[in-house]
Image (cartoon, rainbow, N blue to C red; front, top):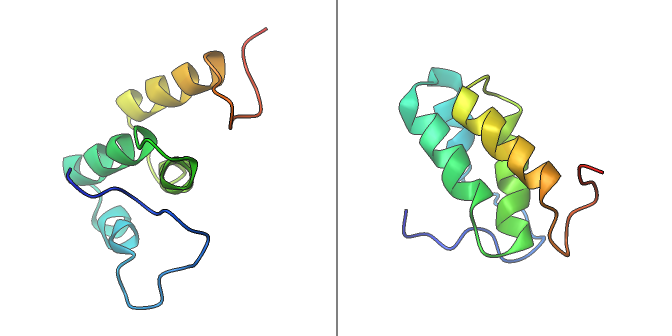
Length: 81
């Protein structure tokens, strides 16, 4: 995915919250979107991925969330101690 993800705290009010539509229809595209958001280089983009992850039970997303929790970066809160 070539998008950079969200880079500010401003919310999209123009209907570009495509992840909500994809969540409603589910499928591999949604899971791939969540994984791409979780891998964004900025914390706001990753936050969108964390929010979107709540709508899936996909095992790849679960594994990525576990790896984030166990390998915290500067902008994360918890780790595996």
